[in-house]
Length: 465
Image 1 (cartoon, rainbow, N blue to C red):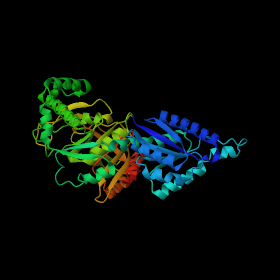
Image 2: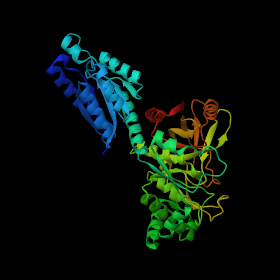
Image 3: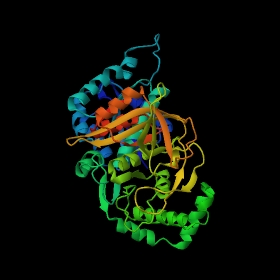
Image 4: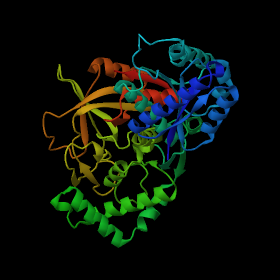
């Protein structure tokens, strides 16, 4: 199980009583944070010497279950003792600038109290060393019981879980990228070095073999599941198209699971013997936490899986998305996002409809897909792009709104949003930053979560808000 570690810095100058208080305070802070965060917090401290700090950082780095390290100089902690440990630390770092007591007991303050509660002084020493060493970290200042402080620590913790996932993630790239498209290309070796995830290529024939092996009894069971979960179009009931869609889902799941891949891509230009472009299969896999990128977009597939992990157990949903067209009505400018088929039903406002309609690309049978409109609310769209000499993460805060009409002739899943701070500023900034048309749309994650993830990986970030 993933966890965080809290290291409380101190020194032996103040005597054993002070160190005992630091240890007790650290345990209480770690316990309180662990109850509020999506993973437990283990107190490791107080750490007082260079060897203790080096060992604690080394052990955190070597522990696969440790998602990140929180440091807090409870008393003055001479920062030269931290150098070896910080240089060896390979996990995300949060500097929690807090103190145990919320209010000062003015009539009782003495030097013992001052020596114990001097993070205002000790954390500045520690922060200087962090800056001097160039250590990437997030700094959160305030009392550890303040809900706003806890919320920012939680955001960082979720980003740390995302990075942990990225470092073990495999993206299955089925077929190649859509021909002649620039933004879906990139340096997969540098992505693995910088961000951690591996991108492995597979021929579409391996997928079609897996689809062909799906047993009829399994297809029957999945069709029944479709009929129970969605508003099934009358024309699909008992149809071969629905059975073929179920067979593709079973084969795709088996293909991915046998290769340990939690993200994948496909492309309509390389479908081999597939009778349909995967639609409902991709949508349901995304709803179960898999990452996806259309037209071979492995960067978006990886980012979606990472965001799914970051947003685990939070309401609202996270999906693959594409900026498709604009409503440029003065005063209500908005982006209509959609895709041919593949939008995650986790963002649906109501029970999706299961339908099949002609698709002008792919040259296959009418694909089955889930049709719905995204629920309204605050969200973000994020795009990971390769600029040749570096990766850039572009993030825009948006407000998803209800469309002014029901869109009866648009048989795809969609979302309508107004970008912040306003349409012109946001769109011009996105274009200037080189953001892609494929994005990750997330309701539970704010821009800060993606900024934290970028900071952890040393990725350049442009936040539009």
